[in-house]
Amino acid sequence: MLTSRVALSRCGPAGVSPRRLRVIVLAAVAGALLVQGPAPKALDAFMRTPVPAAAEKSYRSARDALRAGVREYNAGDKEGAARALEYAAGQGHALALWKLGRMYAEGDGVPHDDLKAFEFFSRLADASTDDVGDTQNAAVTGSAFTALGSYFLDGIKGTYVRPNPERAYDMFNYAASYYGDPNAQYNLARLYLDGNGVEADPRQAARWLNLAAEKGHHPAQALLGDMLVNGAGGLSQQRVKGLVWLSLARDGAQGRKDDWILGLYDKNWTAASLDDRNEAQTQLQTVGSIKRR
Image (cartoon, rainbow, N blue to C red):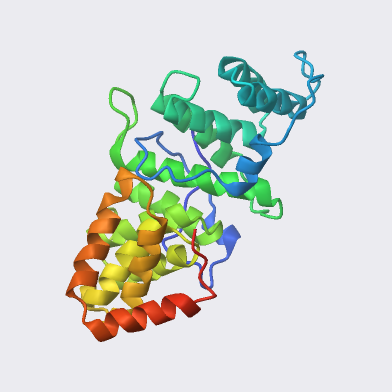
């Protein structure tokens, strides 16, 4: 069984010392993805970077193997890509560990295997350091912690991995607080809303949803908008602001998986007064600080 040396403090980003968030503990290896989310931009861009055809199969280094894996993946040889990436991952290369985790989680060119995916993410998380100066590695490390948290929620059927909502909270809290991962911030907010692995706290949920929403996370925008329109969880009712967030979420909704976002938008927009709808439309035209994605 793998072990992880990362344990997490139950606190948010304000006043948090990264080194105080990390202590050595044993960790179980756990469950199924709640929100996989898009690939971190740094790795996504790297995977599209052209790689010289002369890359060697007898890899001189982990970096060479990673580049060969990229070339083969982009050429459609995903089995060859997996072999090259496994060589790089064996040398502890963060990007290779992350990409292999994603491939096994999605069954992308390899058999779908959540346990293997978790173990690659766990190795990446276990090897992480407090130094986030490397933006590319920080992005994939934050994403790995988020994936681990998602696995901890449900467990992996038929394996030694068991559901552990408290540890899921820890993983999401660390990725959200230290790496600022918007998927982690959204998932952490859902735990606070549901009281799953942590005491229910709608205000904390709204705080994390706001952080993710500001980064263009459309599900977070939708949930936050609904809460503000209706004054849910004891929040002060801010109908216009809520309609703005719901409109941004609707604009970014993609495909059937986001039908619930469209449903929330339609419900709240239809019930809103004409004055509130007009004011929301005016704010949408002038809201330069919020990026639509």
